[in-house]
Length: 89
Image (cartoon, rainbow, N blue to C red):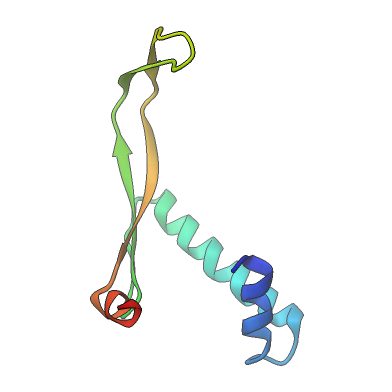
């Protein structure tokens, strides 16, 4: 499922596809903004999103074998809730 298909599914519940697009965008924007502030977003029964700091580290260029430095960065992480895991199994 891609974002367009998600919007179509939400549009079945809301009045219009435009409202569904706005609702989906709002959810994604809110999660992104919270992660930028280093907040955790917990959705009961679904899971939690949090940001994780990755330290700089040494890596290798697979083509040349040359050592390179991989820069430090912040990456998003998602942990599924038990209810979601149970629903899949």
